[in-house]
Length: 324
Image (cartoon, rainbow, N blue to C red; front, side, top):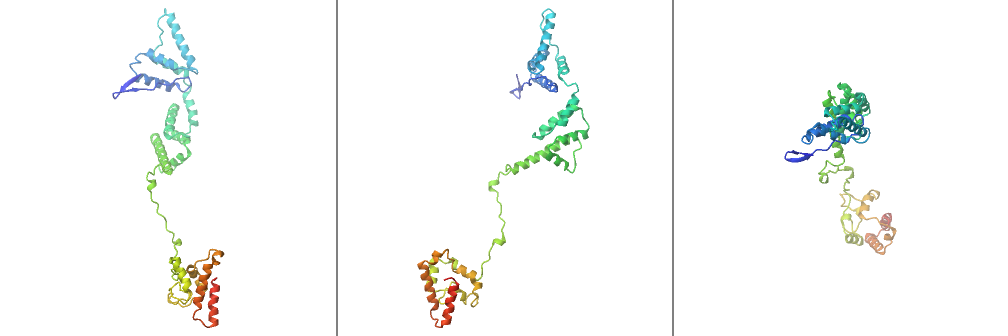
């Protein structure tokens, strides 16, 4: 069963089977009516419509009802000298369905559904459709009552957003539109949180914040020993050169060319000397023969030209204080 729509064949889905559950007969009859209208050439007689509907009535209480309906039509035909059974008009058939399967008080049943209706995991559009269908069955038209039931079934986060609006909806149409808009915005925000809205994420530049506390100012008294090669440092050791002015005959702590200062107290220059003369990593390095030779050469150079025993003793004491 298909019709031409814009030059293309389009097949409409058949109505579902009907089991006779109360409260569903109205919707089922509506689907059947639409199907007959769409396929008008196939269902041009009431008898065809009724036979098609009877074939969809299976299971539950609808199956036995359809069987009994067919039996009565056949019995009536036999009573009339075996004529072809007549199933009546489509309108009378619908009335029989309503009398047999509709709720005695559909509005009361709908109100029970309305009290228990909750959005849950359903998207807001689906919740709105269910709500409008049930509220219509209840026959409720007063907006305050509609809004009260609608808010009651909403998920709490969405309900809180609606209550936080500066101007609340004042009619049912805006009530549904506002709820749909707020949930759409919320879902969009969730997509961005998951990274779905950041197509440029890989190329996104995040500037680093500069911590001024991490920047160390260079000591004006610091020397260039850290920029010297190993060969240059060894040469200074052997020749007894100053690591500050690179001249022979004195240590860097006593260098007169150091910012115009004379001999500085030993304790105040420990940081400078730590940079001048790298720390020994372990005792094995201190006992290395090459290291001892360099130290001895430096001591000899420092003592050259000093004849006063007291002064020579002072120089040796300084070397001992340095850990030589």
